[in-house]
Length: 129
Image (cartoon, rainbow, N blue to C red; front, side):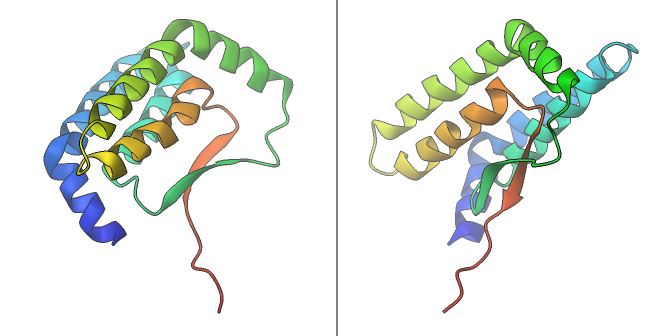
């Protein structure tokens, strides 16, 4: 089911979102100061390629003091706009019955868009029977 969802996601805007995130990440990486932020934008971009079957997870080894500083800077500069766009797209997609699964994927990406440092977007393991 996640393969079909990811294919439909790519055809209905996921690929364009990935390209936008990739261009933004490259622009940020052109500056020395923007490299950590550019890497986080690339993380969001790869999340836009295939969000079905994945979830946002907290990294246990990411309790570094710089994480807080970078997350606050990210939140003030980029995070709130990205999170707001995911919320708006999630609400718009949930208006239709067909768009509900895609809206839930946007809601899932809000946390990663708000505070990406110290988080990862990983595949959900299959449940053991």
